Length: 275
Image 1 (tube, rainbow, N blue to C red):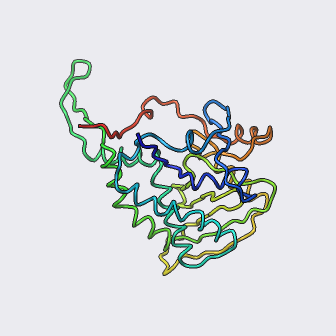
Image 2 (cartoon, rainbow, N blue to C red):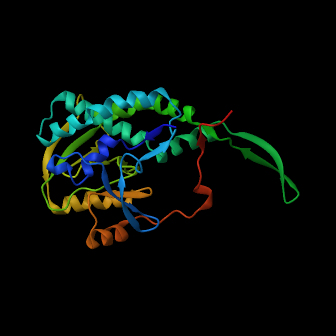
Image 3 (cartoon, one colour):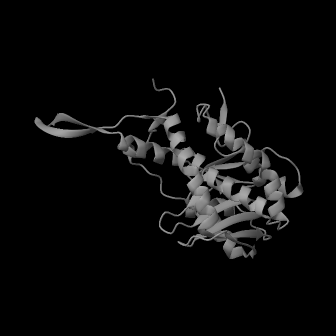
């Protein structure tokens, strides 16, 4: 059964302890938001994937092209190479990473399920009432929908945002999580940690430009801390770090979101085993 990495290994390797030394390593620390525990895990075997998540949908194969080029994109950005082809691949990868995680797939699945609902007649406390029948959605329906909207998301990234690449030379490195492309629904702004020493920040402009505004800035300690705070708050289940310290654990506990205990929000609205 295939391991479908919704967080590519090529992405996670830039948050391992060997990255800044130019050494390819395959382990990092995963901190559980729910259980407040951490362990050193393999990015190949234990992190950022689900078995047969994408049900062999062609979109997953399309995404592999961007995964293969990601290391060269990151290397170019580290050297402040902002050529058009680098920015094109960067923004496409960012949009794909936003769409491909289970949390966004779940949002899409619920939208499809509600759109296809049926009204049924039933009884409640002995009285006839109208009810809503909502069926589970097939995984391919979710990915077909994402395939349709992804070009417009990429187009928005290219035309409606001011982008900044944050270069981090402080002693506090960037963190990442299990849904690393973080979009603020209230502002439209984006935060996307790229590596231990790089992060992408997008400000929504509400104006369409011919090309994106893009610049590199040196991140202060306060700005790095601000990005990391957002990363912790927006983690679905896991936060990833190259190391763990008592100070970092306190930072996790102080900034993590409150777990959603509503039983109606649990489970999945999509499956790849439907008839």
